[in-house]
Amino acid sequence: MFTFATDYCLGVFVSTLGILQLAFSVGDIRGLLLFKSRLMARTLALALTVAGFVLFFSTGTRNINDYEGGLDAPTQALFFFFGASAAVVATLVVTSIVNHRMRGPESDPEAGLDSLRDTNYALSLAHSIRYWWKFCLRR
Amino acid sequence: MPEALNAVDTDLFMLMNGFVGTAPFIDRVAQWVVSDYLMPIALALMLIFMWFIDPDRELRVQRQLGVFVALASMALSNSVVFILNFFYFRPRPFVDNDVSLLFYEPTDSSFPSNAVAAVFGLAFGIWGVNRRLGYFALAAAILYGLARVYAGVHYPLDILAGAAIAAPVTYLVFRLRDLLMPVLMMAIRLARIFRLA
Image (tube, rainbow over all chains, first blue to last red; front, side, top):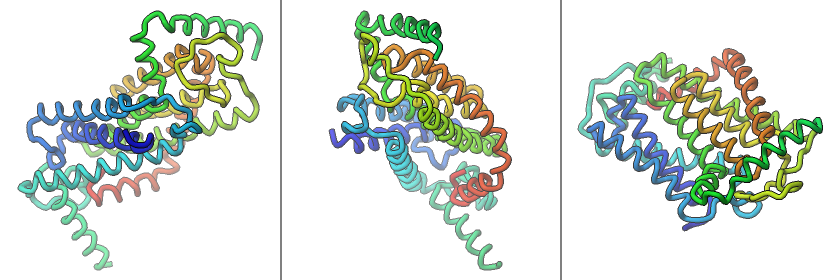
């Protein structure tokens, strides 16, 4: 479809979107889920995970040596990082919009992912940053 | 490598690779499995999955530390193979035998398998902190190893050696984890501030 590296990144991006939704559903991190229904969330997750692989493997020859257009191990690791990071950022942004009504109580600043059970990501991040900013100013 | 061992290894390889062409569907699947991308991506996705799945915070920290261990053991296993290749070079099976090749022709040493050592490094790392997910990871790594023999890229002994390198390396990384604990915990705490751990 595109260049080998772009196809790879795109495949990783889509599959990571899926695996994240599956992990958030299993981990009960509702603030990062696109669908509240467990069945819907997991169906979407599995579909996206498989779609990433299908997208990559069905759009060209993939058994290519690195000096003939494939990716060597360090480059593959780097592009995996790019694709997966983009998927994490996309999930955080989209779920913050979709779950904008989730405004749980301000939680423990060390709560991390646990704070996202009742609160959307943007709000939870704002609480956290505000706390740590004040904490730094106090010092 | 001893002559007798080499002969048995080659016979076993010829036996497995001899099935190529008998079932086109299996050949097609083997081409996907043996690819440099399918299993490494699948195992890396398992690491992402493992990072987030535990509702219990203490357990989640243990699994998140396991992600670091898995990545370190993959990198270290790769490094050990890299160093070994300076001292011993074994030509690929297709160089000396009449092989049905389902993969491109790699030019690096066949023994030990670099890709298999890396994949087993990840799989053992996952298994060390999450048995259920670890069995899936190990199954994926074994399938990857078998597919590489079937596809004509490695001898069976290359695969065994790759896995045999990854196992003690992962054990060693688990033992050394405590030394790096302050740095790893700092990384997890930082991720927690950004609500990502």
